[in-house]
Length: 299
Image (tube, rainbow, N blue to C red; front, side, top):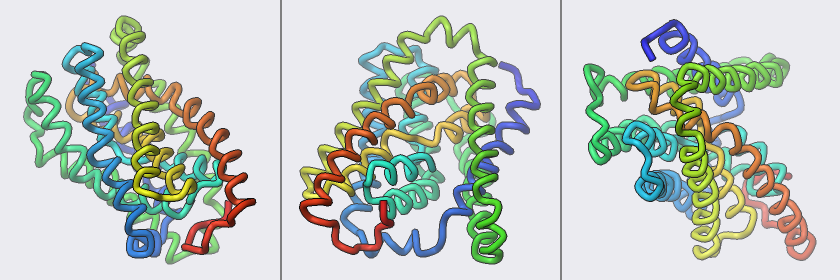
């Protein structure tokens, strides 16, 4: 798709608003919590930074995706957790504080992970190079559309807490509408390519979603994290910031956005079912042994 106002202006603005809304819900304490929950945060970020992207590589290979679609799946897998993961973790009676901390840190870490895995994927799948933009250009743009608005949101919360409390729900609704608009626009812009590859891409995206949640939950459990922390980590792997993946794809090749757009159609369904299952399990565990006070938010 040729560059248009939708890809050059609307997409970055939509992502910026979404990242500001995330910043409005964060404080510096959410970043300091890494020292309070070091094992949970480390395992969660290991899953986000290594397990998810390499699962995307493997699934793209097995599914035999076309190069641009394979790169798009890896780009999605390398994207940080989305804000909805925090809400669903809360609904599942998971460790909400751990979820928020992982979202905050992984959103900053996207400055490294997204360009890194995008470059590796384009080389591995022979999808060409990053063109005139180059790696440095992508880093700069990711910084501009993620870190800057995130910092602005955090500053506004710290500077005007009462006003932010009044408008946060409206801002979140606007962010949700913008997210849906981004997904619809991404699908519409490449409708023919989406319909031609929908089954294969959908199966690959679904496989990534389920595999990432399953593997990350198993790793967390094997590492002897409790059920609430394992829930938070799995949910973070199930709900990626698809808007970021779509926005980065628009910078390089809009076809890279197709897996993220398709993924967005059903990720809330699978994550919602997981949340429902874990809510019952975590509630039962809480009645037997209430979770220790560790800075987690009450569910």
